[in-house]
Length: 87
Image 1 (cartoon, one colour):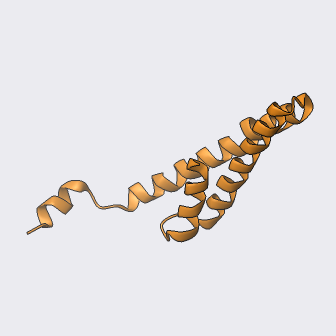
Image 2 (cartoon, one colour):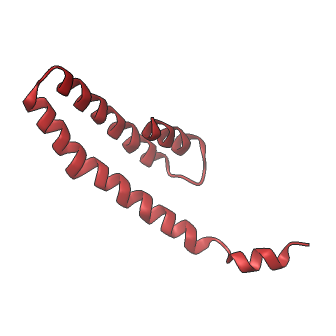
């Protein structure tokens, strides 16, 4: 559910890039596929989907989010400056 909400936030919030939302939806879909493959005892599908999730999509999503939030943190004003400006 968290990945679906992340995808929704990326589509509705201007601070987050839209392509990250697409990647989050893909990750959620892959996880559902893994659950279905596990329930149907399809070992090959489970292994392929797990490989795609663990090696490609999840790390790409984590790195992309980390880089994006790092850029946002560099642009944000210092907390001390914000406290001093408040009347």
